[in-house]
Length: 243
Image (tube, rainbow, N blue to C red; front, top):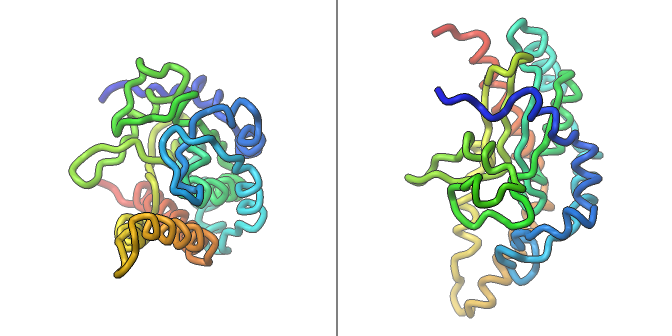
């Protein structure tokens, strides 16, 4: 197995959740390229980055773990080889990151875990499925390369990436992009399919409005909670089922 680039020193350079939210509104962050799918016109790679700090703060303020989730993470963290650190690769233009990262912050707090967040990209947004760390040295593409998302017959630099470690940086579990019960590609594919009588522009506008409405619906919180359940269940199996 290749040696991980995630050393204790590298992990420590990541941002806490509070630092990440504050960073989101800085001129430094807003000067970086974004992916504009959150804009009414659908946007594109290279779009002007929008300040998402208020969204993260709002979602964090109302994010709540269930009693069962709190009990589970405390039980797991008390295990001698239990979870102690959470690494997250995020980009604030990603709806999946805005959904999951605040809940992960709550999970870390409940279990006494150390959370560190890294941007995936530098000034330029990644325009390929597989990152080349040498091409954009101001990003964290070397970390991203370790945790690519294998799906649909290919590899993708999906975000968020969530990696759970023991206190001595032994990987316990990784969670990528969205929980299994959120059939995002299926749902988005339906939204983006043309309806009878629609022009191409009308389809694009309607699909974007439906996607934004879905993010404001209770179902985004359902899927955020499901992501936590998925992580907790996987950690339980890792710590209790012997090979």
